[in-house]
Amino acid sequence: MIKVLKFGGTSVGSAKNMKMVADIVTSEKATVTVLSAMSGTTDSLVRISSLSTQANKRSEIAETIDMLREKYSTCINQLLDSHKGEALAKMESVLELISNESDNFREYTSERLILSQGELLTSAIFAMYMQEIGRKAVLLNAPDFMRTDEDQKVDTALLEKKINELVDDKETFYITQGFICTNHRGEIDNLGRGGSDYSAALIGGALNADEVQVWTDIDGMHNNDPRVVEGTYPIHKMSFDEAAELAYFGAKILHPATIQPCKDKDIPVFLKNTMDPAAEGTKISDEDDETRIFHAVAAKDNITVIRIYSTRMLMAYGFLRRVFEVFEKYRTPIDMITTAEVSVSLTVDNTSHLDEIEKELASFGKIEVEQDNTIVCLVGNLEHSQKGLAATIMNSIHGIPLKMISYGASHRSIAMLVDTKYKKEMMQSMNDKLFGKENHA
Ligand code: ADP
Ligand code: ASP
Ligand code: MG
Image (cartoon, rainbow, N blue to C red; front, side, top):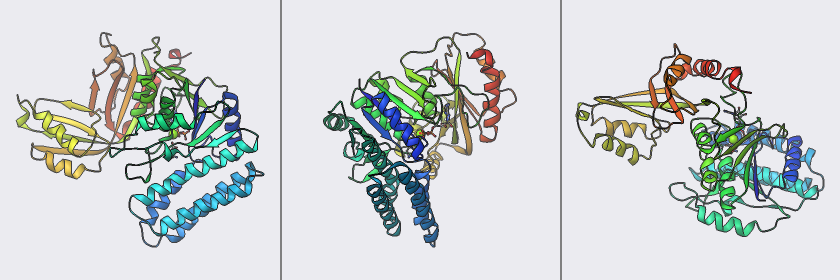
């Protein structure tokens, strides 16, 4: 049985937790173990990179590097014995590299190189521990097999070829880094924040694994965001499509791209809790839970809405195509869209080319841009033939002003745009009214 197990930052966040991870990896007979950086590391590395571009920040950079030294050396001292010296030397060389890159900061390349160090160091320490406790463990360098093209898409054919060559012994525990890759220029790069989940799914797909397990700090996918809402509960069974939709619309437990490689190969994904391995967690597969109407809510912040008012839209064809072409030109994906007689509203979360987009759209008519919005997405068995569904949903958020609604594109979800200041109230209200105690066992 081929299993790919991924452990997030908290799961490898201390010596104690790494020991629990080693127990899980051993008892599950993990084929490949994909690790994130110890919790907080990537945030610190992002901070070092950003400070490196500013004047007079040397002491803050040095402080952050010292903090990382403290965190990693504590872990190494508590975890390792015969490999302690080797691990501490590795840590020092990583910190020196970070410090040198920060001193000679090159736009683009230095940040990516700095960001990759968390996963590289954490996985090296863990592999040493596995060896120290007598496991046959081999550390694989993810940038050797995880490569992206100019559009930042992973070369899955190359991944499949390389990983199948590397992973060839059933008795070996293969350990590797999530998140990091090599880009089309041959430089070290990454798959975006939270990307270790995606790494694991891609590796699972490439190995045609029997299952992918994502181990984190919570007992599975909850019906609502536990960071925002009180009274959430784990969902034990969920379809690929629903999980993908929730991840896309902000359920942080999964990187948005995670599901697709597993869905393509029909590989079930299990979400499990490292701190409570006996908890059931969530199984994501092609099976749906037909027994409930409302399954879960997720939210995506930092959404910008762009409204275009144009009389040229009236009875015209080709208008929307021209609007979409502007977004295509600037490689900016659109999340939601609604249309009226002479206006169209669109939402985006990537605002890096907003100024150019606004300028080009201005040739169509009047443009309005509003920032600080949130998309709240409800997923479930939202059959269009079901009477009263829309009314039930709207009643659950009575009093919340909605800016946009997207309903009908699938039987699976309804997405609503609100000013971010209403997000918490709206999500809590939906939780209380649509997911009452009677709705879950
Ligand atoms: P890891 O470091 O293991 O990748 P993350 O912090 O990326 O962990 O993801 C786990 C966190 O996702 C949880 O601690 C929880 O706060 C958050 N989260 C957001 N939405 C959900 C949800 N619907 N179900 C479960 N967890 C969620
Ligand atoms: N360490 C990376 C991050 O914090 C990747 C991950 O955790 O999945 O974004
Ligand atoms: Mg994560």
